[in-house]
Image (tube, rainbow, N blue to C red; front, side, top):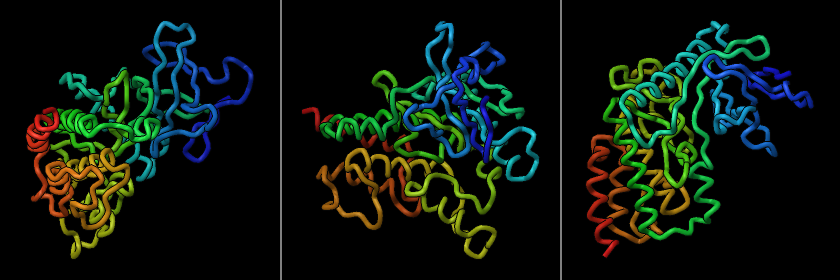
Length: 307
């Protein structure tokens, strides 16, 4: 049988073909498998992620994200994690209602019982790989035009999210997924909505991945409840812009931008591209461009490089 230990759902090693079978409210019985059988670990800080297999083969393999916190847990921190998972469900439903392209396909959500605990879950389409693995497997062997198109497509998808009031706040290379040659946004677990801002998060909580944090996310984490030092702790659309700047740099360079940047730090040696990224990485969010402006600024560069 499957077990639940310290926030992790572990699959059974039994040869019983029913040992890892689950029942979903909207779809019947499915089998769970690890994303990587050779490395049985779950991708996701707040969720367990598995491949969802239909034994009848009537539907293609999908992915299921299961909240690491059982619904029966009632302490403050657990309730916050469950609320965040519900926020991700709300975000996916908003994407579906607004027919936003460029976001990983959402098939449904509900409650599931595993090891005598009930959990929230989300079912999503299965990607071939994430952007991090895509770039590594290709050994970053792309032309500057191709890299520019990657960036343009990704920023266009984030602009669509911003238009419906969703800020991602967890932009990084392994939250962008490759599906049939298209890059799609995934992992909406840290999203916030324009009408809610950051009110649902704990004041001393880290919002986002280390190495990719915006200055305001870092300020929020470090200042905690000390109002004396709470300079700009609101994480919003311009925070996504900062993280997208880091993502752009990674796509062009294969590493992350740390410290003060100069044009001669760039391998790609294109002043126009560097200038866009440098503005996106400004410490003061007021100096960062709006996401729509980034797309506009990329157009003349794309035209120039196509000549």
